[in-house]
Image 1 (spheres, helix red, strand yellow):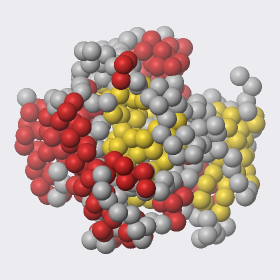
Image 2 (cartoon, helix red, strand yellow):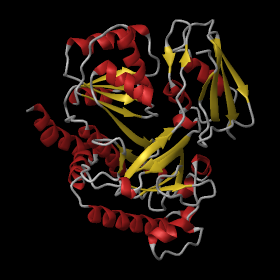
Image 3 (cartoon, rainbow, N blue to C red):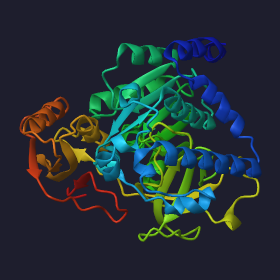
Length: 441
């Protein structure tokens, strides 16, 4: 009953006053799930044509390229491949002339690459990604309003976020730093009410919770687990499944507004083709065959305020060859065989508190004076943070970073050193490494 009231009365009222369209987007994507393969292909082609045509007319960065459109799929190859540094350097030129930056919603993220970017979108475009995310959660069996534990890096919940948490029956778990006290309290709560909660959050955070549950012999039964934000490694998945006696549904996207693919009934990932166009390319920008690993390059098909065309996201991936598609798959979306990423290392404090990648990105995303960073841990006595200055760098940026980090690293004997460098080498996937743990395993 509550879920029905929430979806049909409360959320539509919220959309009306917020001038958003979250609930309409949620319903839209439910319908798209039933489309045939031909319908999905046509919808993607139409959306691609629309966004490319609009982009060349209205977006200065792309308009200056002088590209002529004929067949969108073919001419897409004439667009340059952009990356996080392009977004940083060309931010103003990437925004459509029809919009003013001050009227758009900003999303700042250093993500798992350690390179901060800021993108902009309208409330409708924001509603699209929120609707998709919730719909992906529904693939796990979750229904809007059901009890869910969510991990994230916004521990200080604003008034509106607190209202949202109450409406969505959400217990928000601070993933910034995982203390033994926090892990114990969460496991006790989940154990006391078996088969009541869903769990959604960063794969590394959920794995830490699962490890604690196993080591302390908690018997926990969840309704479903949704992994997001970082790489769900095989040993993570096995650990989480054993700890919580529930299936894990992995999702793949980025904070730049791309909801790329998610799991449901298959190990492969369903690509949300009406929302994104995916290319898998070699290092020279040539498309590789399905089944062959390459660089993931994405184009968002429903964002016009700041269209990102051929964005190299920083991961390697493999498309599933058509001949390997299961005959009775649940949806007709195309399939991504695998997202290849590097393992997200963890910083360990002397009291065994663990900091994941988002513990640091949650700080540095608000410090634009630092263009890129990398955390190195040699031993349990401290960390060294290598950093590259931005053009607006001031020494106070280091002090602000330390101040924020010390809110979670309270042991003053645990040193936090900063070291300016000219270059931070990427991993084999082409993605700069944010944490390098040199602790002996």
